[in-house]
Image (cartoon, rainbow, N blue to C red; front, side, top):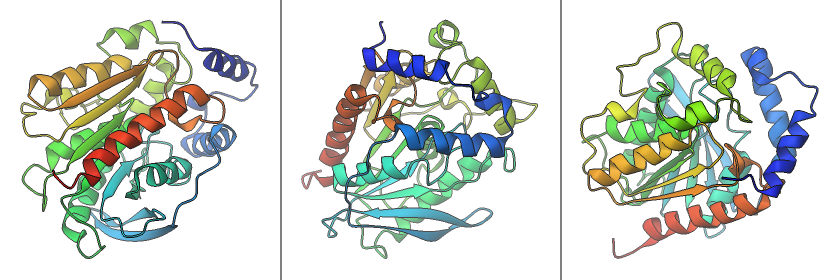
Length: 315
């Protein structure tokens, strides 16, 4: 698979930077640098109806979420979104544009969770927050003017992994089944056993050093190689999970994790669609200003797929 021209230009631009790589920084400095970088690569956000912060009960106290309301405020559909960043960096601000676009494009309310980050809050804190947020949204949907039968979950990178895990961990605990899961270049297997992790071990923007930095901060000194909350492939039952859309990038070390999970879901009878944007890299959905082709087509694909499942009155 060849890099597309826009991605080639991005990698050349990144290689000329004199800034220290994120894995050589402290978590605090890496978070600030990640925000700064995304401010240069994100699109101008589309117009939505409103964005506001709110609190929900969590396992360690109140959790902050940001609610994005579409222009058509009567929508009863909702998407719980989990941001990426290896569970160490990333926050409501880094994915604010992404969520505005998701709200605009799907016509659904989007709830972005500010889950706890490592190393201050190591594994499984992020998982526990995600599970709590999904249960809260399901049971409080009516109070929020939403339909509990029109809730989807989505996430990118580490957030995609959290979304996948939350669906397993909330089996039998929700007011109504989640109608869809959208996993965008999800991080699903810390074992690194699949070919893309080896073949693309030095590839921008998450080479092996970056991935190990994330895992060291999130999992500590004892990586949980037998815990399905860290490796969703270890769950025993995938039947009954909601239909899925899994998007990956061809030049992403995490590519094969997404493809493998799609095959696992399909083997369990779960309706799943898988698409690999072959010419680009991990994180391209936050780089619409510079990766216009991949971002634009994936954004349309994601929105159409989610909207169909959230607004289908025949479901």
